[in-house]
Length: 273
Image 1 (cartoon, rainbow, N blue to C red):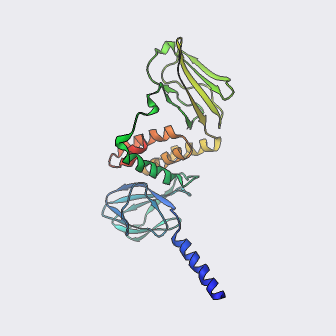
Image 2: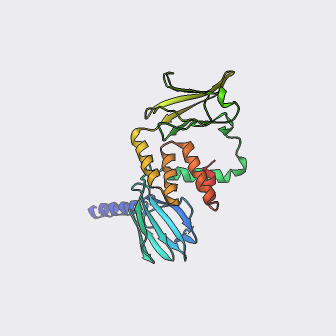
Image 3: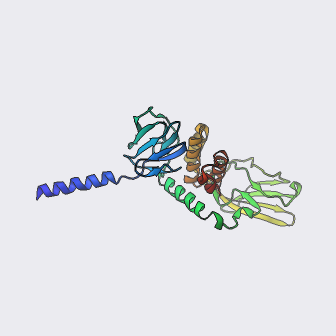
């Protein structure tokens, strides 16, 4: 009886080990690479411990561990194994590595990957977006600056435009008359605070939108990530971080820049929409 219970516990532990979830994801890929037994490596593919990666000659992969921010660059030809905290070479050159931005919610990679896939499937079905509104940025998003640059479309001469920012209580915290387009408030807004901004002419308002500043710790995380994101893979992680923090418009802009650099990765263009 005791022996049977012990075997059951061991079996459960074994199943849990084999069913361990993803710990890393593919932040960049070039050339021929496959997951052993599972076909070609996809951009943003999530990787679980025990995954074996097979790279062809001159192929490269950037594998990022979401929780730690550690990023490993693999170069082929070679065979590599994904472990819980690192990627090891079983054949070929040892991966190089460096520490980048960690993600507070590693599950964001799954959501982003699914969003990209869904957008690609519905490419021909997408309707008009809200970017046809008068105001362009920031609109219903979080922002990574306490002095965000406010952008809106043409429709009024600069000399006749008034831009104002109000807090959640309706108190005006900044106002500019005859504003150029775009315009940046000269005052610093408060962290973790909701605001509305309005663009108006003597004939009335031409647009109003809401946004929210990030909390101070998140602002610091974004600043560190931006300062250290030099490679393509690091900038992918930075875009993921922006999306994770709710800075959705800035994330789309980051994806758009990456998409122009790497048109062979259609997921990037899908995320920029």
